[in-house]
Image (spheres, rainbow, N blue to C red):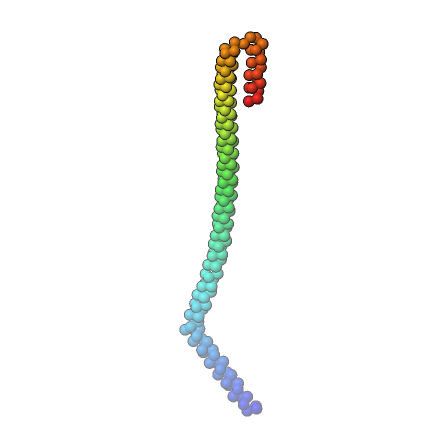
Length: 164
């Protein structure tokens, strides 16, 4: 195995020299391009990271804006609900007032009808009294009564009126 040792050392030396030559050639020809590609890739990744951070900040701002809009919409909805409730209360008061006025008119109309019926009834009673008085006067004239007979006739007349 020792006979092979000088060959191995020579092979290792040749490989190291070959690697160095390839390394120097690569350094001269491709190293700047490789480093440029690595730098480009690093800048691309940094740009993507910055874009992601910017989008994240934009999303946070957009979320805040949407929350503000939702709060505004909620406030407007509450205001509209309160306005509708106020209109409902006003409408209810108006309906109650109209109902009260209508009932007052109905009561007044009923009172008026009662008064008219009362006037008609009084007129009817008056006409009946006149008719009865006329009959009494006719009887008195026919009978030419004295005071006692006249008093009895009036009493009988009052009894007849009381029965009606």
